[in-house]
Image 1 (tube, rainbow, N blue to C red):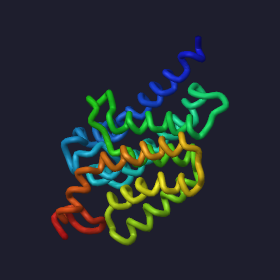
Image 2: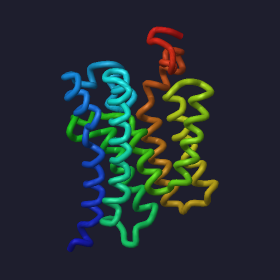
Image 3: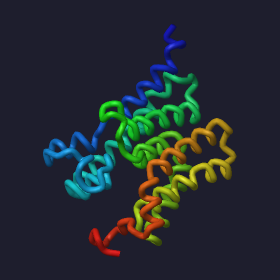
Image 4: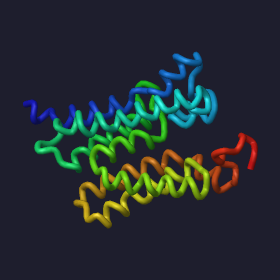
Length: 206
């Protein structure tokens, strides 16, 4: 009976872990405001940094990374024995969906980047290192956080293909990438319009 319920428990548990609104809770505690109503309105570490400072943003980032790690390491044994990277990525995808569409905030969440980092570090660390290198390189060249995230997301399926990862892993990696890209649709529009905020520049500047 437990084996039959295992996958449901693993995926539901991963989604609920991902749904924990770390940014909302911390900003509410520190500033007594709803993070969704200030700054960019995003429920994530970047917006928390703008609203509550770098320290608070770093805490939220690490907690969101931890949500991905918890799903990968803590929940995946319920999904498959022996645990495989595909099972870990499946639980990780559920956590990222929870972060992006959290039941506790009426399905209005963040963009899932930090949680995806935790998922990749826990499940496929070499792929994670490659994505991180792409993020850093893209950010240093263009100075847009969103461009770094989009470039890293787009690179994920390509790195899996080049590494000859099994097809289920590549499908799940592609799904993770699509979630990240879809959650950045407003950023993409601002990039096309030339109104996206560039790191190191005051808001309202070029």
